Length: 124
Image 1: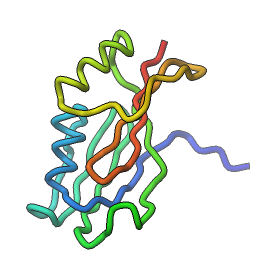
Image 2: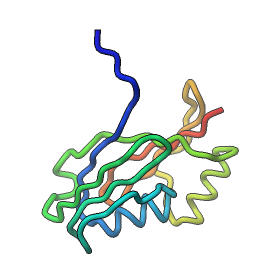
Image 3: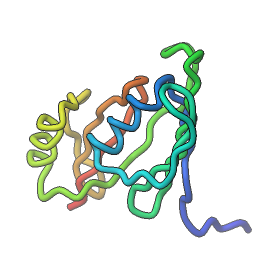
Image 4: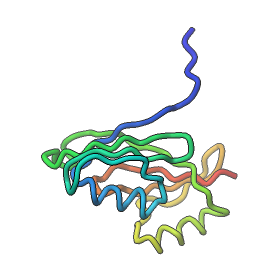
């Protein structure tokens, strides 16, 4: 039987690399590992804990027509969901859905610049 050791990385397609990096790095606090290209075109690798997100920019991709991914989930370092909501407000990132209880904490969703749903989980 196959037994995966851990989740390694996820790849997403975006339309504007600069805007996406502002959202994930400046807004949500992910670490930029490497970047290739400038402006709209290029790719980047981001790190969130032990998970890597590979970002591939394709300005020709039409937002909403190409299903890039359903969502990705980030476990956030935050004392409470209210503190997370306040930090998102300070970063200019709107909450897309109200917090909901999960088996291991409370989560909410935001959307990245291309509309990809990003679940933010505060573990209890």
